[in-house]
Amino acid sequence: MIRLSSQASQWGFMTVSMRSLPGRRPFLTAALAIVALAGLVAGAITAEPRAKELFGAKKLPAVAAAQSFGFYSKGCFTGGVAIPMDGQNWEVMRPSRNRRWGHPAMIALIEKLSRDAAADGWPGLLIGDISQPRGGPMLTGHASHQIGLDADIWLTPMPNRKLSTQERENISATLMVDDKTHLVKDRLWKPMHTQLLKRAASYPEVERILVNPGIKKKLCDTVTGDRTWLRKIRPFWGHDYHFHIRIGCQPGSPNCKGQEATPDDDGCGKPLAWWFTEEPWRPNKNPDAPKARDVMTMANLPKQCQFVLDQPDADSVEAVTYRGGGGVPIVARAPEPDAPLPPINGNAAGLPSAANAFIATPEIGIPLPRRRPPANVGQ
Image 1 (tube, rainbow, N blue to C red):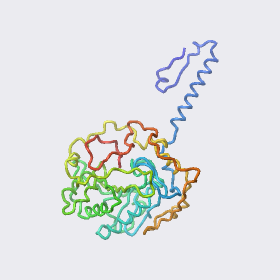
Image 2: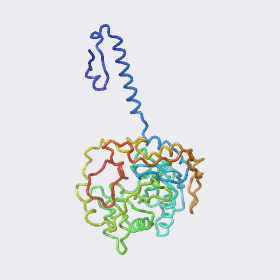
Image 3: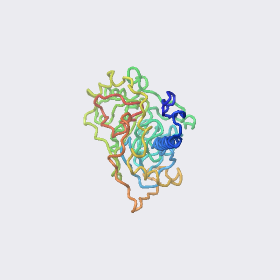
């Protein structure tokens, strides 16, 4: 007789009554061997590395032409460059995260914004997360920022002195929105905040800028004159201390999947009012559900991402740091002719339903009412 004890059953272990198997030791040995083999197979499956661990371990970008693969929340990129830790009009925050990398077009845009914003009177940019050196899912935090085309900029202006490394790691950003009323704190919001967002939205390559719904409402209530740029300002959970710039897929990236265009109106109508109802802020019904980044394996990413992981590192951080004015010091290396990049597999292994935020994000601009996602999804 083979039976499961209550404790062993809880953990999936099998116990055997030796008295019930006289003369059946060969059978017992074979049964235990099968159980052990099954355990090894199950262990091998569960031990499959998560994509976030593989991409998070890469300290330098892949030496290849700049190219984005997949979607903002499900992809990777090659040819990444780093924005310098310090510029005339910016400083990089949280440097230990190693997330100051992006597609050259993204890094060039940040540098341009820093100059134009300074001319407008903004003291300088504090730059948050852009991407990991090769993109991909991050170890913590964002669901997006995976293809080098997203960047976070703090709403706190740069101080008039150089911050120390310790300050960059630990200093807190200013929360601009009251978490109870979901409205902007009027004592903190200045006209220069509005001008900074308007300047960022003015660039044609910027497709959308994610902000807290309270910030969107503040703009809707106060902006006069030209309001066309407000269509790019899209409300979303979080984003109460920074804004999130997203640019479109760049030339030379045929396997990059973009989002639909934002609506033509200013986005200040009925969909915005939904954010100030109870529904968007109800507690998550399943707070312990795994986040998409925590369960993704390479099978869930575009096939090209394995190529991205396998490419050699750049020689050094200095060799692939953006120099400004279009100077991008990176050596482009095309794949070998007999090893072309595979096409994106639209039928890649799916994710658990609890992690379905990693499918292509629906149009989130001024969204239709829908349930609140788990924390950190969609950022």
